[in-house]
Amino acid sequence: MSKLTAIAVFCGSSPSNDDAIFRAAYGVGKHLATHKLDIVFGGSKLGLMGQVAQGALDAGGNVIGVIPEFLRTKELVHNHLTELIITDSMQERKLKMHELSDGIITLPGGFGTFEELFEMLTWAQLGLHKKPIGILNTNGYYDDLLVMLKTMVNKELLSKENYELLLVDSDLDQLIKKMESFTPLPVPEWMNKDQA
Image (cartoon, rainbow, N blue to C red; front, side):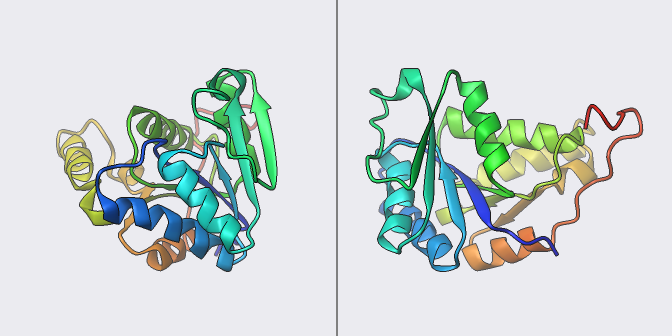
């Protein structure tokens, strides 16, 4: 069992036209804060990002925003965070979010959210980290993606063990339980300790 203390949340900076998804983002922030889990997120007050942060702040939680300098005005930084970290690049943002968290939860989002999720999965596949990575599949948002991932396994372009690195649930409590019980893959034999 791994003890989770801080969760990186990847999600969209757009609000979605699906009210269930929009409301759920606030609920995720509130739930994590209520369970004494710090939140690390992309720093914006807009869209689902802003909802997650506000839900946590309203529940008295610690919320750390990480945003690159060039997005400070475009994404409109949330002004009431516990801490705001400004990075030089998107890559540095992901590294910092990774460093500050011991688990990752992905909510609905667009290209940026997918990119963050798949980079973390790729790092886990390569043995670069051992943190649990979850998708909260609100209102079936990720159903089609999960079908695609199974197709990748069936076509032998993704191994079953790497597919199983991704933990999925539509219920946040159940997803957190899966993350706490997660067993990471061993570091690949072809990697040395310095690389991992």
